[in-house]
Image (tube, rainbow, N blue to C red; front, top):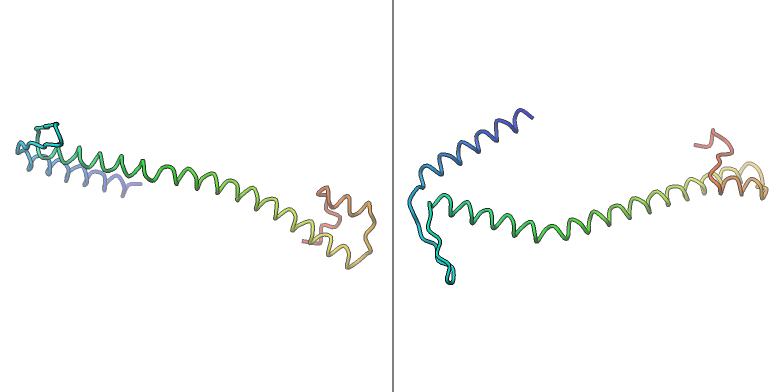
Length: 117
């Protein structure tokens, strides 16, 4: 955390030095727009516009990945439970022929023997 603080201070210092060294007034023309200002301010605006554009491009994919990850976690939990039940049935069937009541209890999530896992 301290390293991030120091890095932030250094980055802020570099930004101040950059702004102080680039005080020349420039004119930017875009179609009918004319914007006059300090070179540092114009570059900061251009950088900000690029960051916002990149976020707008990346955001839909990130949201889609988030929901896909949640669905996969739920599916993984269901599959893990099905595997646990199958392992229990397999171990139980090796020792004793299963009765319908034992199979029903295993299907409802009850563990017949705690030594199985």
